[in-house]
Image 1 (cartoon, rainbow, N blue to C red):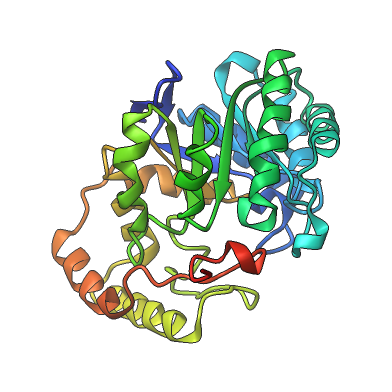
Image 2 (image 1 turned 45 degrees about the vertical axis):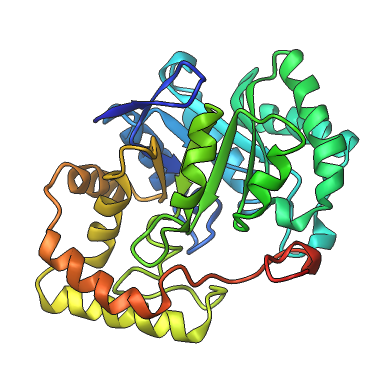
Length: 315
């Protein structure tokens, strides 16, 4: 496993991290024993960052992860969780100081630890941005001061919100998803600002929540139909060339030296072992060029979620 420095945190992070959404059965109902083995396998192979949230499986992911972590020394992994988003709609979310402080305490109990390394505002576009700036992040700084978290971060799909929030309040870390993968590399535009400020960068969903897979995305996937069709075409091209678009997508994501860690979500110990093998193999540059050419017509195409006023197209 290779490691990179994580912003100004002083931490070295494995280039591959484990995401907790699958432990919450986000994509399929999991066997809990497999989930526990997946966590153990990841750490045994050098992965040292695990990212989760109470939203994943309505706290199931944190509960399963907590069971797995009981057998693992606390100093052998970095742990990240989130606050604020608890359901599919903005009405299911609560970014108030009182709620997020309670949320942190509940997460610590489920995870069986006395602190997390990163506490993150989950999917900012689902909240009132002014509240996040003036109330949520200050509350998380109090959590940090109490020793319950080492660093405070923000997450979301809407890239324009990161610099907007950072104009008003300091953060230690950001997590972006679906914006550094074969079909969308828009995160690159934020890298100079993040590097200038020493902000730690987590990149998640390198296969774009299974858009970049031969099986295709789940029915709930919010991508527009045209993008789903184009990704399916790229996946078929890969298969016809004897490749695997998911492997290529993961190799592409971790190849960027300016992005310290890419997080993959799985509850399958065999899959995480395969992911680890994949990132050690050389990337097929010719196949990469062909796939990127197929995806070029909708490069950086995304979708809107959360509150309408937080959509990037709103005035």
